[in-house]
Image (tube, rainbow over all chains, first blue to last red):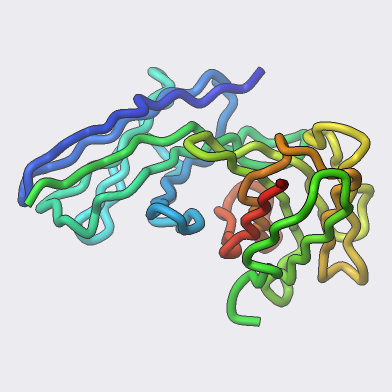
Length: 112
Length: 115
């Protein structure tokens, strides 16, 4: 059973601070990793992808991957109230449905 | 089209009725997925279509659920004899070819309420 684990939160972060979201996965053969943002009542929106160990930066977002520890994280710098949402971690392990396994998401609240 | 289009956006149906949900993926995307998301829950995989291959139906919760994809494009998810536990948001996603290198693009979903 492939599993993706996230702390459900809520994670409360003051505006302007760094929000750190974490995700662990069970399948050591996982190859691709994604972060989705989902606003309440809306569908998930892809915001970051990462495939290699290390950091990947895109604007205020940084994804970090450590395959040895089976750990992927998302950092949001200079957090804004508009960043308040649920963040879903998704992992692709190949084979089977060739699909993504999603975590249940972390609810992030940015406090003005 | 520019994005993944789903219809209807909302559907209220009586218990025991059949419903059809439609998904029109991004043009050229070969992979199409159906998920459902119950209130406060994660995404539950339902079914996957890839090109002309036989669909992966391993996530369908019961034989009341079925889906088809015509001409490698539009997909319809059918739920027969709906039950209250079927109430959820049904999300369709599509992806270009390339295996797991690319994330999905989701449609805006169909919110199904069974009363």
